[in-house]
Length: 133
Image (cartoon, rainbow, N blue to C red; front, side):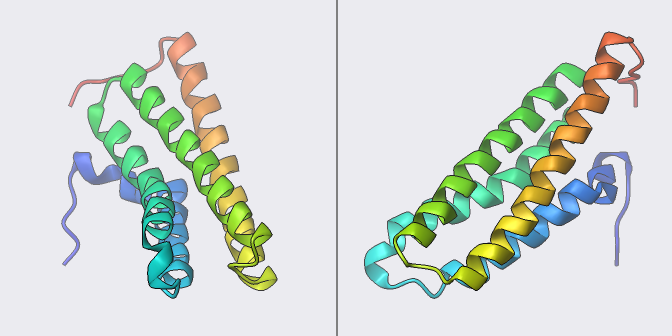
């Protein structure tokens, strides 16, 4: 059953959906890492998971200033995640194929976040935001 209300509207956002997909892909790839890389693997998985969580939390705040802040946190998490899998690739801990899959989807999420931020910043400047329920 899909429960819907105004607070769960973030689930309609393509960027949130893609960020959830990115988390699933990352978990699938990094869960195979050996035990001695558990801390590193966990940090990377936390970074990618933070993207969709910050998009959702910002959406649920209703204040455009807070929403923009959380989207910026999500964008920062994209950078952290990119640094993680880039260094894994350089250390030959993930394959070229896995790197490419992660990079294509991460790049898509980054660009969707940048577009959403730009759109919301315009609404903020134009005072075109209704934060009433």
